[in-house]
Image (tube, rainbow, N blue to C red):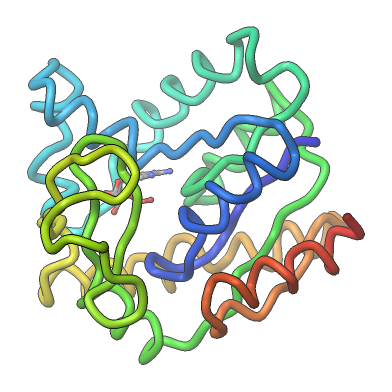
Length: 209
Ligand code: AMP
């Protein structure tokens, strides 16, 4: 099963993807996580994209497409994958279609106020990338990841100015993908307002699993 998780930042794509990986036995490919790992390791890619990401803008299509193309050529994704955060532009979607045929695009439907509430309270594990929230999903011990013991931090792009920018970028550049995939008959809309346990139920029902 080759899936795309499409939706604004903070819609719960990454959190649901972690559960879907277990359910479906296919890997999650998060372009945002790949970029953050490159930034942490100070690789040439990381140095190139750091300021773009911190400001809430998109990394250029050429760089992002090359990265995903390389990743989708690896052995572990031949059975399927969950693309979390890619494609984010029409040119990215068109490029993807030339090297992989997706089965379904799950559209996470959520209004801006819910997104802002989620992103402004989001805390992320530096080591494994797991998402927590200061109100809705607190770690057992403050500042420490429940799963790997890693340090929990606030992403630079979860700061208020960057959140606003990312929402504008989403509406302008990524939301057109909803119609693009709907016209291809691939879109599956899910209500992304509920908390994660309920979203999991909604997702399973929509997928028929
Ligand atoms: P995410 O973790 O999906 O919210 O991504 C964090 C940031 O990484 C985004 O705000 C972009 O700056 C960058 N990014 C992730 N995926 C893409 C993509 N498909 N195209 C361009 N930039 C991306």
